[in-house]
Image (cartoon, rainbow, N blue to C red):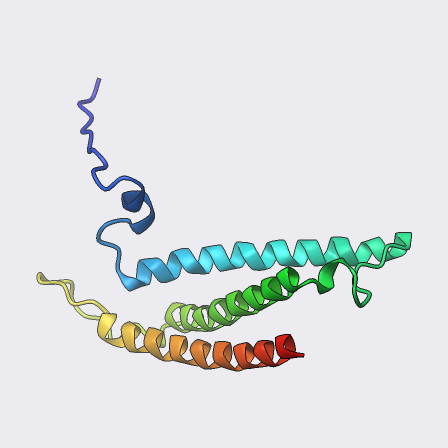
Length: 146
């Protein structure tokens, strides 16, 4: 039997959530996955609610179930998830297509990475997502003030 090393998680829950030495790229990866699942669940819920109209159940009518403030806030979170997911997806597409990886170099220690090219692209895309998010937030506040 192989000798398996065992490492204790001394950070508790934060060690599981934070991951210790994660960089911003790893957090972006995790958030991209989470927002993708959130958008998928929203679309599934939307299909179910829309299909209920065939049975004569109208939940979108003014004053009904989906016009409560809790669902309005949920719609804003779906918008925020979309803003992040869309712009991070554009960034990932650009990286995968080779636009943001830099010139190929010989892998000689100490290794040079493409972070000098990818990190500014990440910052630019997140700035665009923040502008998009702020515009949607302003619209959301205007709607909630009515």
